[in-house]
Length: 450
Image (cartoon, rainbow, N blue to C red; front, top):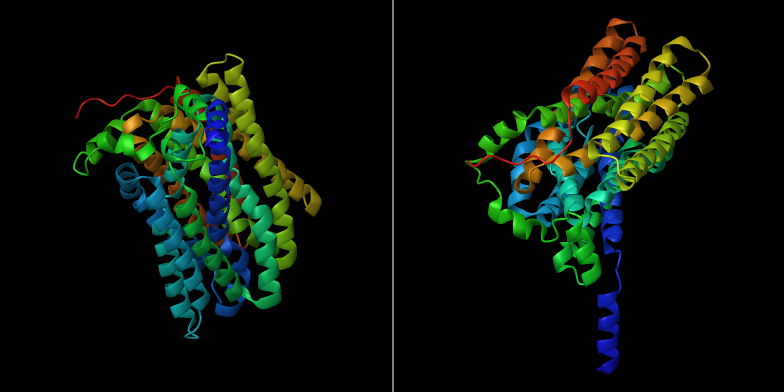
C-alpha cells in the first residue's frame, strides 16, 4: 500500500506528456486518411489503361470524393459537437476503410461503364465517411493542447498528408507494379479497419484519461485547452435546429470568412498533388508508374519538413511575445509566396529541376498550412466542430473544382499541363491576398445569443 501511495504521489507531481501520444495517434490516422484519398492517383494510370478512362472522366472520378466530403461537413460538425470525437471518429475510420476495401472489386463486371459508375459511387461514399476527420482532429487538439503548442500540434497532424505521400505513395506504386491495382485497395482498407479499433481503445479526453497527471491536466487547462472535451461542450452545443443560425454567424464574420476562403486556395495545391501530380509525372514527364511513385515522395518529404517548421516557427513567435496575428500570418504568407514557384515548371525541361521546383513549392505549402491552428485559435468554444466543418467544407470545394478544372485544361490543351500549373500558382497568390486583405486580427470569436 505504501509503495502504491508513493507511486500515486510521484505521478501527481510529475507532468506527464500523454498529449503527445494522442497526437501521434491522430497523426497516423490522418496519414492513412490521406493515403486512402491518394489511392486513385497512384492506381489511376493502370486503371485508365484497363478501362480506357479519358482525362475528363478521371477528373470527375477524382472529384467524386469531394462532392460528398463537402456536402457532409456541416452534419459532421454537428455530430462532433453533439457526440464527441471519440465515437464519431471511430465510425468515420471504419466506414471510409470499408469503402476503400470495396474499391478493389471495381471491374469485376468487365464493363468500362460499370467501372466508372462503381468507382464514382464508392469514392462518393468514402468522401462522406471521411467528412468528420479533420474537424475531429481540430477538436482533439483544442482539448489536449494549450494555445502555445497548438500551432505545432496542428502542423504535425496536417503534415500527415506529406508523410502519407512519402511512405504510402511508393508503397502503393510498388504494390500496383508487383501485384496489380486491386491489391492496393485491399491493403489500405484492412489497415484502416484495424486503426478504427485502436482509436476507440486508446482515445479519451484529458480529464478522463488515466495516464494524465494532475500537473499535465493543469498545464493544458491553464493554457486554454478544453480538458473535458465533448462532455463539457455538448451541453452548450447548438441544437440541430439552431445550427444553421450559428453557421450564419460564422459565415458573417469577416475574419473567419477570410480564413475559410484561404483554405480553398491552399487546397488547390493539395488536390493537385493528391490527384494529378503522379499522372503529370507519367504523362508529361514520361516516367513509369513506379518511378512516379518514388519521385512523388520527394516533394512530400519537403512538404512534411515545411509543415513541422511552420508550426514550430509560429509557436516560437508566440513564446517570444508576438501577437497571435503575427505568429500565424508570417509562416502562412511566406510559405504561400514560396509555393508560387510551381509555375516555373512550365519553363524548364530537365526532370530534376522540375522535381526541385515541385519540392520547393510543396515545402512552402507545408510552411503555410496553419489553417487548422487558426481554426483552433478562433472558433467559438461551443461550436469548434461546426466552425472546423465550415473551414473544411470551403477548403475541400477545391477537391471538386481542382481535378475537373485540370482535367479540362489538360484536354483542351492537347495534353499540356502548363495551364494547370498556372492555375495552381494563382491560388497560392490568392491565399496571400485572403490573409493580408480579408483576415484582420486573429482572435477567438464569441457567438451572439440565439
